[in-house]
Every structure is written in structure tokens, then in C-alpha cells.
Length: 402
Image: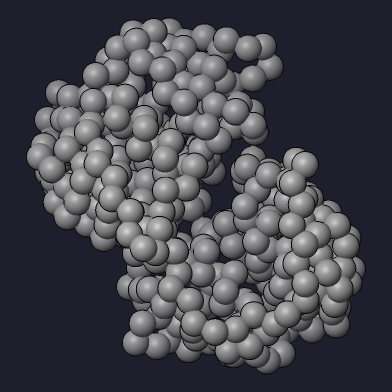
């Protein structure tokens, strides 16, 4: 078990926010499916992004990696417009995005195609794809009883009508959006209930459009995808990540003035909502030429619906726990199926540090306290839990990783 001890100190200063993982996944996928060579800049090769890169290399794309002094990568990607999917095994490591994005691509022409993974990924729900497989006579087998992975399947994805519940992870919709333009006929995706996590679909559509793919979005109820389209290579820079920036923005509220650079006000990222949430809680945040700045000050409780920005919950619980009054976090049921059960994990972490929380099936009620105590907390092998744990403890915090 690994442990990291954090000594109390207020955060502050200037930081260039790391690139968006959500945008990075999509840019790599689109470039790898394109005719020609694309240059993707400002990439951090996390385990998840590496999993997507390796998956696309297995399907036939060529990727050259160039690292700069800031540990950011430039990827030169020569795409493959007709992926070689037969008999391929893709290791998604622990990346839910890689898993759910790659399955429809493998299904373009699957013959004993396999996806594998580890950790909680083997438990992540996959039923929407199983329903499609059964409708289209794609045979599949879960190789380990009680687990979703390894998964082996054979068959061919067909153009036509797809119906998905809007409460499922948007990753399933994105996976289909990537694959359906490559089929030899037109398709539609009907969303049968109100769509959660719309911003992730916005990111997908934005990146696909930049790589030459047209999708008609009819108010998030119906997506019309023409067949026989081709992704076209282009150069693309990945923007800064609001979900990671949120930790530093909150750090500036709870600590010292913090300038967060490379956060675009026109971004499609749903986690840009952190700006409005901080404002709604009375926090001091302002736009700058390069991003946003936060300054210390008191904040108060609020009712926050996170259905469109669930990844903000870990850091929002920290801000709420150190705010005056009561905060209600609602619309967070899907957090129970992330890298960890993030509602349970943050309840455990913050209770250990002296916060007052009540966990609900789809959210939390948080009563503000004056300060945190120290203690030993478990990251649950989840980076968002690890990053949310340290802000402003009154005593050292030790973060463990199983």
C-alpha cells in the first residue's frame, strides 16, 4: 500500500491547468480514424490516454510520441479509415472511456474481438451494448462469471435505428457516434429519456466536426448520422481541463489567490460549471485573459445539481464542507459506478477529516464546519478522490492507495 502525507499549507500561485482528458480521448480517436496525418498537441499520457492510444495502434493507426520539457506530448498520428478489428484484443486498463469508445469500433467487423481490463473496470455496466448485440445478432461472451470483462464478441454493427436511455453514461452514445459514420448506411440514435451529461456529447460532436464528421443533433433527443463519411486529418491542440482546474480554483477560495491558466470560457466542457457553482456559493472568481482567478473568502451552502457535471462532486464536497450552512448535492447517482463509488468514498474521506455529511442514493447533504482535522484517508485508487482530500486540513493528511 502506497501512502503520501500532505502537510497543511494554503494553496496559491499560478498554474497552467493540465489538458482535458475528455478532449484528449476524443482527439486521439478521431485522428486515428482519419485519412492522412494529424498532429495533436498538449497531451498528457495518463494511463487512460495511453490505453486509448495503444488501442488505436492495435487497430492500425501509427502514432509517434514527442515529449517536451513540461512532460506534455505531441502525437503525430497517421490514421486508418478502415480499422483492422478481427481477432484483436484491446487492454483498456482501467479506462471506462477507452472501453466504451472502442467496442463499437471493434464491432465494425468483429471476429473473436476481445476487450479486457482491471480494477473496477471489470464491473462497469455494459448492458446498453449487450442490448445492441442481441438486436443485431452479434454474439458475445463474458469470460469470467460475475464480471463484465474479459468480453469476447463476433459480428458486424449495422446501420439503422438505435434507442438508448438518456440516464446511461454518455460514453455509450459517444462510442456509437464514433463508429456509425463509417457504416455503409445512415443511422439515427434516439434518446428515450432526458439526456444526462449533455456536455460530454457536446465535446464529442465538437471534436468530430473538427475532423470532418457531420452529425445532426435534434435537441439531444435524436442524432442523425449519415453513413459513408470519412474522418479527415487535421492539427489539433487539446485545451485545459476544467475538471482538473476545479481543484485549483477551489484551492484559491480556501487558500490564497490562485491564477488558473488555459481554461477557455467558450469551452464545451460541462465541468466549466465550476465557475457558476463557485459564484452561486458566494466565492470570489473572475475571468482573466488566460483563464480564471480565485481569491479567498467565505462561501455559503447551496443546492447543486451535478447531473451534467458529475466529476466535480469530489472537490465540491470539500468546498461545501468548509462553507457556512447546508449544501445539497443532487443528481449524482452515476458516481457510484466510476473508478470508485465516489459518493461513498468522499463520505468516508471527509467524515475522517471531521466533516458532517449524510449520504443519499443520488447525492449528499453536507453541513459546513470551520476546518478539517487531519487523518489517514483512502484514495480508493481514484485520482479524483486523492486530489480532493488535501485542501486546508488543520493537521497532516495521509492518503493511502490500495
